[in-house]
Length: 257
Image 1 (cartoon, rainbow, N blue to C red):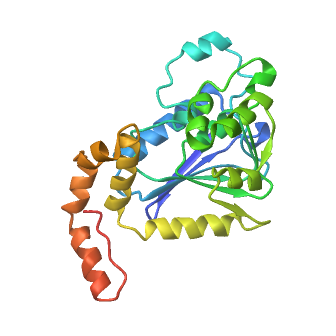
Image 2 (image 1 turned 180 degrees about the vertical axis):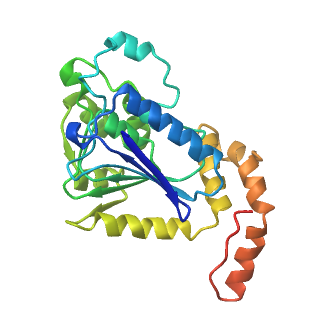
């Protein structure tokens, strides 16, 4: 299997497992990722998903250049409605996604990072969109998402120069939430998982659904939208449990309903 997927204790772990090619994504692997994100969308027993790459060298270096079954134009023309890896600009997934960047995140690998809600990076991680250096472009999320995540000049510098940028710089750019020191990425990731999973599952989904569905609207228009996940969360037993637990000075017991 080129992708490992498991769900345990309300945490979905998605690991690209092609370390021999720096976790490059071929068509088979991308299809597997799309199926996994669809499964996560349909389940109600997941509070957070973690995407990472196998090994210590690479998160993913993007499209497998040896998978040359399509020309550049054919690749661009092929439908990819959710972006690279099925995640780079997916808007139908209401489960929070953590990108655990353990090494190189280049090309499509970086585009998948752009689809995450939280980015945690090893201090040795490198990010980049080097497509222009091989006569291509970051077609599946890079050109459209990076400019929405960081200031214009910084985004253009990343794409036009094709440089590899370290994790500390990406943290200064505002794209990385936390940089982990040597040997600390597991612990840092577990801490973020624990903090997110401590929140009510329906509240997490509602927050992400609002962010995903209203970014193009004015604040007044966004506030007026009665999105399904928000209504469900406000009507849930967990909404009462959260307040009750706070007043009783105890940890809430979430039912996800």
